[in-house]
Length: 309
Length: 228
Image 1 (cartoon, rainbow over the protein chains, first blue to last red):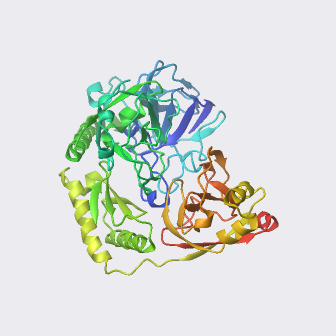
Image 2 (spheres, chains in turn orange, cyan):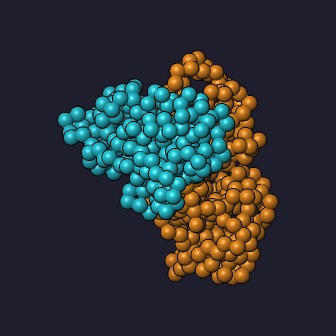
Image 3 (cartoon, rainbow over the protein chains, first blue to last red):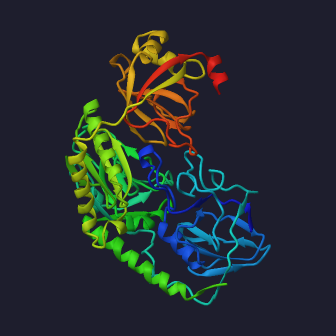
């Protein structure tokens, strides 16, 4: 089956759940900025949770399907395609998502999954080094994606209970663990509200509206950072590293956002705000555990609604 | 050895706070010992200056969420015990041909003026030393090279370039490095190598790894062009 790109949208890339085992070579894990939504979109159409799907940023692409297919949209919401449940696209139909209602990134999964080759153990697009996904780059008008034809049937009249989703919003509170250099900063990270700057991208969210003063100017040796690391460059404006961030960093780390809350950050558009709340490592692990439990329930509930042909 | 969390999915082991070859050797011994232990819970190992960071997978580390961090710490402690007596990592010596100056090294002239030397002296100095790869990161395959002569140390450019071509050899602060993929960069560009430092299809993908020694040999513009 083929999916033709009639309009590409601002930044539409093929993403999965990222790469492992290559951070030591400088290759970021990458993958979906909001892994929760990618997993859910895949589950809704009967795919493996890690199957590659489209990550749509702010403006929607327009796609034409050569054959009929079930699709599901999760994450950012759009006016013309309800999220959180499967939708049938007719052969030859143009899939138009309409206007963005909220969120920053939507995940469009196609039943059967996109047919792209794995590179370094992942099928996601590494924009910086230009490999993986579709031709190692964002989609362009005229591209033709291949999708595996699905063999299963879905029944349509239901949708995912919103209470199962992360608490997305335009001013979320994200939970964060202390960073190695937390004591070099006053508590400003936890008292203020920060605005997401327009310079934010898949590498990191740049935050404005508050400056974090460091009590020392000691230079640091570069060491590993990870998605969620909140680093503070000399200008005092924090940057939250995200999926495509560099693997090593030399700026002080004031905090690390708990993995379970990275989807909340991924859905912030420029101009949205964020606040931070402290959690311990044990709490962060418990939160991740609880989210996996909710996911297991979703998986169970959905299994009954997808009929293998 | 000091152990501390990096967020909720990695542990940082600090073995030293310096950039000496001895500290690097102990970091790499630990990295090799952890890799040899073959724990399925460890997803990534990132050596850097004095530290080894072990990324772990929560579901596989143990049902008890609070146990995850402690389990990785125990593994690192056990490996540090074994690593201290294990063999050092075999170091490879890699020759990197570089076309210095001209279009390949647009900052060579200005940097030479800044350092009070002729371009030939800068090239001579830069290519007379064997450098040690301390870490690979920043962008895929980017080697952090230690050992830059004092005489070549210069502050970074005040305005970073938006696009540095792949293969560019730069000097920034007390370090020299090679940009494996086109990326933004703030270092002074003194030359360019036709070698590919990163190819996704390669085994391994990155040409250099921590512990390798690198030496630069000058090549002409014609040699550079014909190599490519």
